[in-house]
Image 1 (cartoon, rainbow, N blue to C red):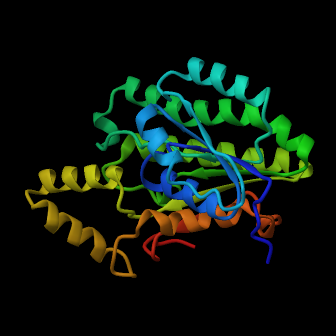
Image 2: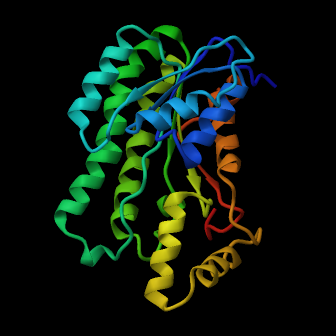
Length: 261
């Protein structure tokens, strides 16, 4: 099985914490050169210092805020004009929790922009280089809500579904060029995002944080909440040559929690 990413370049978004950071670490361990994308430069520098260089690769970063898509577009287009990117990991922090009916229209607009529109900006910038190289892996980290909407995440459920359908459409368009497009769907994974969801659930139900966390873990057949690196392992595999014929799919990494095939 060919899991070698030496000579490959990867751009990983939302990569200073959680699943994004774990994905960058795993891709670097397989030999890829990593460019991190996030808004906190100090955190970016710290993360770069933690990435493996055992294959002689170099790493860097782009400071970008996904709430400012025009600025993101300028920066990634400038980067793409000088660099070929073989692997793109789209990853953005989820919208605030809450019922769909309680959300304002602006909540949907902001989420659509920071998720789908920014993802599209990145793909538009890097796809030409992938086509020229005959190798491309676009991996979108979304949510199991793509399969079954999650209670209390109205805006997120809506926008995540849009991203999944956009991704499937791209997978058909880009496959002839040796580019695959797939979605990784994390279940409960111990990230800052999940902590905020647990806190919101605890406040809503009158339970303690630990009680709400224990209830959430009990919903998973595996009986526990995952660590970010367990999601990152799936991301890294989909980026490799071994995954060349896997295209246009949603991959739940959730310990068996999602109640659908």
